[in-house]
Length: 152
Image (tube, rainbow, N blue to C red):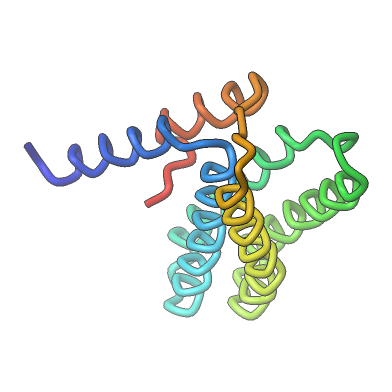
């Protein structure tokens, strides 16, 4: 079996068996990776590769925004505003091709990723089980398992 197929199956299985908190952290990890790759491509002068990575980053942010229930907690509206700002900024990074601007987008995302990882670890350590909602499964399951928002 070829390595790419094995890797794809592994990632599909990892996403399919992950709980909602793991899927969220996987998406944030991928978002940071996309931005890192885009910045590196911009520094190399490869605008096409940078645009591809930034397009994927926009897909990740769109998925995060589309599943955010702004009424579920007091910070929901602010997080949605941040997602909308980040989408505009990622588009601007792609158009400008400026690695410094792209690095600033990463500086915005990395603390969020770290906070979600910490929250997921807290949930995992608690005795209360987390049950994925239909909205979570529908939103992340189909997109993530299909490879559109893969994590590698």
